[in-house]
Length: 117
Length: 115
Image (tube, each protein chain N blue to C red):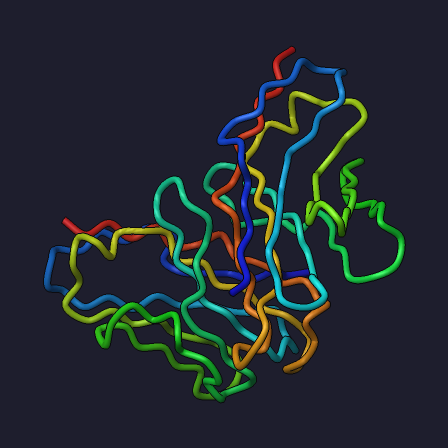
């Protein structure tokens, strides 16, 4: 079946530009996570949605980062006024379980590689 | 705070030999532990997890992992390595608290299997 998809796969932005990264989770998955993976590092948590509710945004590095999931399926991560330090791979993951389903694995998309010049 | 350590940046193994990728964790409470593999330009793929029960967990592609509570370790193992196993491996622990369980990853270990 279809997995998690993300678009675009690659994005080059000039410093100061706004970008929007899209995530299509697996159909029916309640939980959606965004992670940031810098070069040579493991993914780091950014934010979490349960359906359309953003329950945790503690990992967002600044107020330039904004995420939404208005209808509880597709999610968009927006970065305003991009900076060079925002260059990373942005990974989206989804999980079937509602909050508290900590035993369930997350399914990851291929990621969006963002390069800020 | 929860954390995961992968002490080796790279592991080199000859094809057909056993492999071990090390992981240690620090959590307050019962750990939920995961291993993921990442191939170039692809997302992370789930390999296996430990939640409770048997300390030896079997997963995809012939991989297994051994949970050791006293050593707070969760090492990934495979009896006979394949060249196609060459990839980046991440150990992760599930977080606690209001995040409803985001994953906390180690830095990753690059596995290189030579013919």
